[in-house]
Image (cartoon, rainbow, N blue to C red):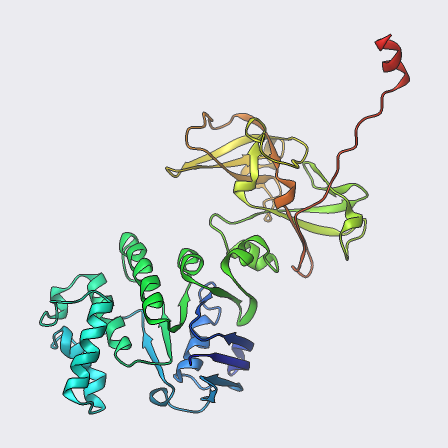
Length: 395
């Protein structure tokens, strides 16, 4: 059994708190990724599980056994690091089997485990090669095989793909997912790469400044972020944020109005300052908005920068007028939106455009606390009544 539980784990270094009251419950066989910006505490959290760092407070259990003060060798874990650290004077077989030989395993048992690990990571026929004869991906697979032969309760991986080139990282992501399926093992993985976190994980733990922000399946973190930090960190490119003030009919921003029914939202009152969030794929040119069920009113804008990505074009648009937009925009990008359009779209820089937001995909956050208020807004357009003048004109 490979359950991992952290209860109120903190790690402090004098006046610096690296991990602050961390609570995680990782299920047996689950692939969990700790993700966050550099220095957020994700690697320190992993090191407390590994036994490389002793927590200042809290308890850690692995497979229903408290291991808080046990050395790494007694925890039933195996680690794969960013620095592959193979022995350059040993061939692949000796590198993989080194830990088993230190523990005086029987030669037949060592051969069995090495053969099985090599088959899992597809290193058959390479046992006599030296590390300098291997590609980067092959060396990483040797490091993973070295962990597999331990047959641990839990695999701990600290940014193992960070030193690989982009194409190889994509390939190794697939390999790790296949490995997880093959071993049915518990894996705790650390990365700052959102693509790795989103594609491989059963759940992701988003960490900032040592504190757990959200622990949920990847798509839940993407579609229902618990606060402004998660909303801005998860997703590439980042979510658009615009500050505004709630009025009786929605949200008034410096450049446009987003209509919704504030009465449908808890904890929101007229006059409150809130932050609207919308992802680039939920901003549409008016002519492309036929399939948007509940669009906002049109927003007049001007294109500023185009970034062709092959399968899409990222278009930065300015919603402010004159010199108040662009380089002199406020720090929260009040006068700027980023949208994604199809690559065949005929659009130029400095072009006047009208856009709408998908109201059902708009998020609201408390500007002061950062906590999420709503994911999706409700608004039912009211049919305009026929005036007397219009009625006479119809006669």
